[in-house]
Length: 496
Image 1 (cartoon, rainbow, N blue to C red):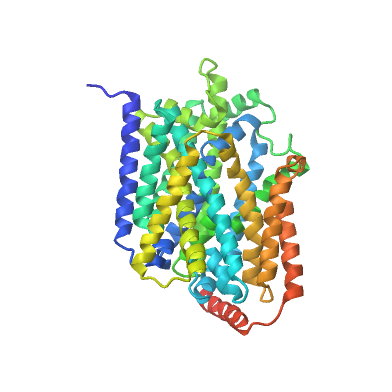
Image 2: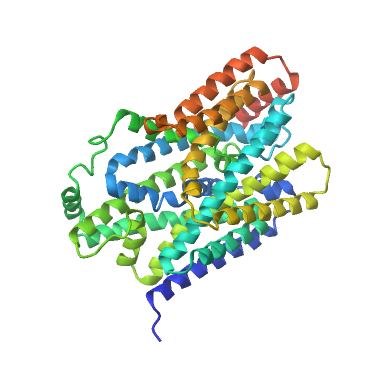
């Protein structure tokens, strides 16, 4: 009996699912308290930290959105990748080591909102609750958008119903996240990041051989669009600024910077930065190269039709490889979706338990009870997100791009000022956070958003307001200044 192509591909997907669930149960054995469940006991090595941050960051955009955009418009779309790479490098360089040390010194904070509370000491409870609510609301919709993408993936790849794909992927993500917590998310992200890397390297290499070598491929691309290989031919100044500004978002993404808090030591952030940025450069280049060979192949083979530019990675994989290998490439797309969803899910759970429940009720429960509450939070957020995803609506999907700007403008300047300015106050943080979030909302929903990405005015206005209000409200708090100085001292010791 000969297996069909879809059977080979489905077999690869099932193996991938089983591996993710196995990792979840492996991580379960290492959870003893809430710190373990929400932050992995600050035990991540540099490779796991780097790849889990990268996989959590990129989502399906890396394998579908970016190749599709470059396929249609050419390398002018590469400015976003440049901005993201610069932003990610700066994030690892100036935020990661200091945040790792400061969050531990400041009452062993295990979430960004709890760090804000512990960092400012006075009048910061409202800041913790507000930031926790922002994370809870935005990420619930963000998680829902990932569930939508998984349902669409199964529908388009295997012909299954949207809802069946939605619940299959949702069940796997919920299981390993609920059981294994942050460690399961980080370990699965590491594996998923590796799969994404291998897929984006192997497909373009095989594609160039198929299209007749590099010179033949370049010729076919130029026949498709003479300006395709140019970064500037069709670019505008505002467009380039908006694309580069995506890098500003990194400073405020909770599901990414939480990896900085979880790495073993500040010293290891240097090695993690090299691994993470190396992975990022190669995978982004692989995404562009996928579009490159895709353009050449479909230009040369006019009888073969590309169903959708965003499906160029999936369709080229099915053309170039054995069905089982094509199934692994499909698993790479799922890995991109699932790594982001699970990372956002655990951060949302921590916001609900650590930043809202504990801040409001000031409960003093056992560690087992807090772990149980964390798992219940994962389940509750997942159910809400699945309900939101039952109907395929563009509203949820459009929120993904909007949320990146929202988090970047609301939290980015607050993180930077908290780490680098001793005189920063809770009043300044709250005012700046509100101004940044409101600016993104207003700017992004008007015609102004067509000319300049809303993260630029949101980030800048947050920074200005936060500094101005802090100067007006500053008063010395010995505990804050002591912890700030201790952070600098310990950081210097660890990095020497």
